[in-house]
Image (tube, rainbow, N blue to C red; front, side, top):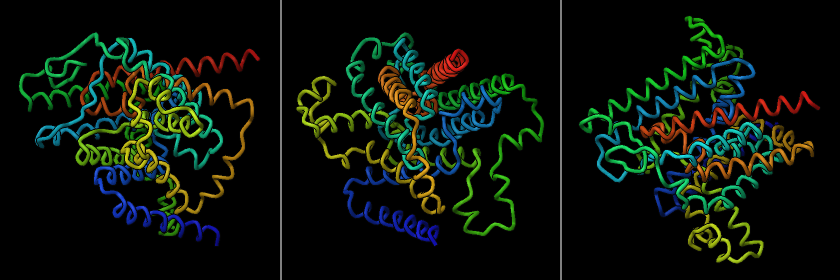
Length: 408
C-alpha cells in the first residue's frame, strides 16, 4: 500500500509540474529548461550513468563499462547537435573555452573534489533524494567554493588562451581546421569520433579487457538482466527497473540534443549553485552590494527571482526528476531515510570536496557539464583537455585516500 501511495504521489507531482509550469512560466525557454532538467534527473537516477564514476570504476574494479558509455554519450550528443548548428540559422552559445593553466588546474581540482565526495555538479542535487546529509553538506560548500572563486573569472589565468583557431578566438574549434563550414563540421565530428576511440582503447588496455562479441554485449546493453525476467510485472519493467548505462547514454544524448535545438545552448550546471549561495548570504543579512561586489557581479545577478533564472530552474528540475523516479518506483521514502545518516568524520571530507570542486569550476569555466561534456559536443579542444585533467585529479585523490588509509 505504501508503495502505491508513493507511485501516486510521483505521477501527481509530474502532472502538477507539467501543467503548472506551462501555465506559470511566461518564458517558454525557462519552461523548456524545467522539462529538460526533469528528464536529466530522471535518466541519470534511473541508469546511474555519470562522470563521477568513470575513474573509480575504471581504476578500482577494472570495469570499463561506465567510461565507454560516457564516451558513447559524448559521440551521440555531438552527432545530435551537429545538424542543427550546421543548417539552422541562429545565435548558438557554443562553449569553446580558452586553453590555459586555469582550465587545466581547474579540471584537476574538480576531478579531485569529485572523487573525494563521489558527487559531481550533475548528481549533487539528485543525491539529495538518496544521500541527503552527505549531498547537502557537499552542496553548501560547493556553492561556497563557486561564490568564493567568482572573481577568478576575470583574471588572465582564466580568460587568456594559449591556443586559438581562426573564427573563434577564445579557444580551439575543430571545424576551423577545415576549409569550408560544411566540411568543417564533418571534420570536427571525425576528430571527436577518433578521440572517443583513442580514449576507449586506452580504457580497455588499462582494464586489461579483450574485445570480443561477448564483452561488447556486456559493455553496451539496452537492458539489464532483471528486465528480461518474464515474471516481473509490466509496471515494474516500465517504471521501476533500473536502466542500463547504454540506454541512459542514448537517452541523455537525445535530451542534450533537444536542449541545443530548443534553447540554442548546451548543458551547464555550476553557476546557479554560486548564485544560490550568494542569495543565502543576503537572506542571512549580508548586504547585496557586498555579496555582488566581492563576486564582481551585478546586484541583480543575486537578487533576481530564482524562477526567472533558466539555469536554476533546470538544476531544480534535475532534483525533481530524481524524486519523481524514486516516487514512481515506490522507493523514495526508503532511500531517503537511509540517507539521513552520516559519520561525523566524513563531514570535513564532503565540505573540502565541495569547496575544491567549486573553485575548480571557476578556473575551468564550468563543471563536468559546462567545461567537459558540452564543449566536447561543441567541437572544442578544451573539453578533451578538461577530461584529461579531471581524470588525473580523480586518480590523485584515489591514490591519496589509499595512502592515508594504509598509513593509519
